[in-house]
Image (cartoon, one colour):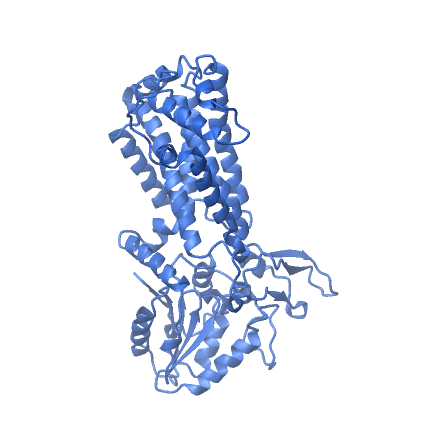
Length: 516
C-alpha cells in the first residue's frame, strides 16, 4: 500500500516536472508556498487595516472605497489579500494530504504533524472573520450560519443566532471583537508555523526565488483580472436567500444545512481526532530501527554529523571522556530518524582503515559500518564480467534488488547519503568498473537533505569530500525514485560507457544522471 501511494505521489511530481525544473517543482514545495501565501496575507492585511473604518456603519463603505482606489492599487491590495488567503488554505490542505500519504506522521515526524493540525482550524477562523469585516450580504449570511453552528454546543445559549443579529448586538464593540480575531489569529498562525518546524533542521520555509516570483505574479494578475468585490451592504436580521460564496472558506455553511449543526460538529471534530490519532498507528516491526550511537573512541568532535542531521537530533556538548577534543555529539533518540546520514558525514567512516572491525565515530546499530564494508567485499568477490558495477540503492526510493545479476551487485542502504564518499572509491579499487548511487527523486529525499549532501560531497563542496584522485568517470548518481525500470535503463547505459575494471588509466569525471 505504501509503495502504491508513493508511486501516485511520484506520478504527480513527474507531471509537474514537465513544466518545472525538479528543484522548482511546486509539488515539492507545498510547505514553502503555504508560508509565502501566509506572509502575503499578513502583509496585505496590515496595509488594508489602515484604510478600513472598523465600525458597523463605516466598514462597508471603506471596503468599497478601497475597490475604487486609483491606479487599481486598492483592487490589487484586496485581491492579494483575498486570493492569498484562498491559496494559503488550498496549499496547506494539499501539504497535509501529501505528508499523510507519505506516512510523515510517524516516528520522528509526529511532532511536526500534531503541531500542524491546529493550524487548519486557525486558518478557517481567520478566514471567516475576514469576510465578516467586509459587512456585506455574504458577511451577514456567514455570521448567521456560524452563530447557528455555535448554538449546537452545550455551553452556547439558545437562540444565539437571533441575539447576535440584532441591531443592539451588532455594534462597534462587537465589530472590534471581530477585528481582534481577524488580526490576532494570523499572528498566532505565524507563531504556530515557528513551532511546527522546530524539530526540522534547515527547514525550507521559502520556496525557490523563481517559484516565489511566479506565485506573486499569478496572484497579482488574478487580483486585477478578477477583482475581489463586496456584495450588497449587510442588513441586520435579513439574510439573502441566494448569494455567491467563497467556497474555500465558506463550504462549512452549506454543508451544515445538509447535515445539521450537530452533524457538522461531529464531522469536523471527528476529522480532527482522526488526524491527531494518525501518529498512534503502530509502526511495522520491520520498519523499527535503532537510533544512531556515538563511539567516542573514534570521534574527534568535528560536529559534521550534527550539521548534516535533517531532524536536529544531534547536539554538540562538552567532552565527557579524557580526550583532547573539546566536544562530542549526543544523539536524541526520540528525534533520530535512523537515516544514517550522520554516518556518511563522519570522517572516520572510511573502509580504507586497516582494522578488520572498523568502527565509525557515529554508527547505526542495525547497519554497522563494518557490516557494510563486509557486504561490499563479499559482493565484489561474487560478481564478474568485463564491467562489473556496484549499486548502492536507497531503500526509501524503491526496491532495486532485481537489478542484481552476475555482473551487478546491489547493496541496500537506508539513504543514499548514508554511503561515505570513500566507499565509492573503495569499490572501484577492489574490482568494480563503476559505482551507481540510486535515490529518491531530486529535491524530494525522504529524509529531506540526503540528495543535497550527496551532491555537495561529490562536488567537493562539503565534508567528507570525494578525493580529487578518485575515478569519477566510474561514478553515476541517479535520482529516479521508485522507478526500477528507469534505474535498469540508466545502469545499462552507464555500463556501456565504462572502461574495463582492470583499466590502469582512471581519470575521474563526475557523471551525475538526473531523471527528467
